[in-house]
Image 1 (cartoon, rainbow, N blue to C red):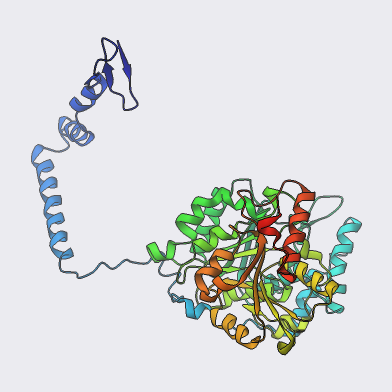
Image 2: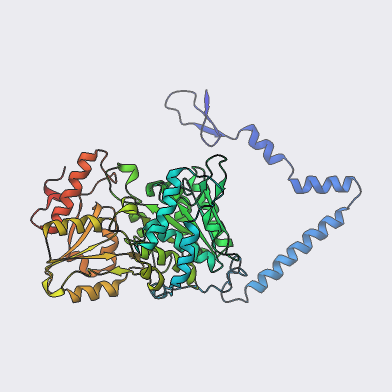
Length: 496
């Protein structure tokens, strides 16, 4: 009796308990005795009288001689010089170190030009009929600009429009990017009776850059890989891939691990791809809450990429503009909001767009330093949950400070704020994610003093969020309660 093992060998065993003996299958012997393709081809040419055996021998000798010559030449070099890939396209883009990535980039843009862009993106063609809902949404952009309260959708449109007007290109792909998963973008609108597509961002100026936006197929691995290559070939294009929910980026994990996070370090190939990952705990379950920021932060080292979690439209606007206005390129991972897309407090003024800049850290403007007893560091959407609780409780002894850029982390600015609030005897890191997720471990790695901070978070879990909306709300409330009352340590003692 015999059986075939996983390597293709026959194992013979006559009786139970016998040691098997191994013999090579006939197929292996046939392959070993088969002539190689080079000899077969050479023999065919000689049989046809095209070449002779001396010609074949000379080819072999010449090739071996060239290898020997190159070997001798290579030994004269002290170190290997790697020729950069696509060096002509990247000749004007120096490699930036972490300290340069923390530096200020001029992202200002004239107010009068913003007015012109706002007009272009809020004016539908008069000779075409659109459904009333679309007409109202586009008209709302104009009203928003006139009322000086610009929301997240305007931040995106004005960032794209201003870059296009300056001659840059913009390319966006993702599973529902034309409309936006949460119906905030509407970059493509359709004529009611013909389904003709109208893209208002193509009407910014006569000599503007190219704007392309595509609803892509549900293959994150393939699409992100394509966009990574596109960004490599076109450093003057703002190349964006947006996940429908941040969790869905895990389908592209190979691209993130092998290329986006380390391509520049491995092959000296910079890249400016942008990934927008909707992130935030709104009780939508484990698959629709977390962009898994801890995974990206674990991949961060030295100067490899930007990680941001913005809380204001103006900061998002300047962040996107910074991506192309800088003279270097780095991948940018942005944890974008869902509920904040239409939050009444998540608005910025035209002045903040025109003359502002990206803020890595946002201090609590309402806090009086001498009165602050509890200093809270927070990032992203959770800030507004804490702000609501702070206002309801009337707590003027608590300062809420937002960390908008998680990598490179603004360590000096954080230390400066701790010194500013020197009367605070209680420093808190607050996050809505479980303890083993989110940015907590990242903060511990970069801020030595953080090991003495109080941590307000969900307890550690294997799933990012609860499947039950009721349980999710309860956990969320207990984290908020603990931020404002350190005696309510529900994370470890009571939360189930």
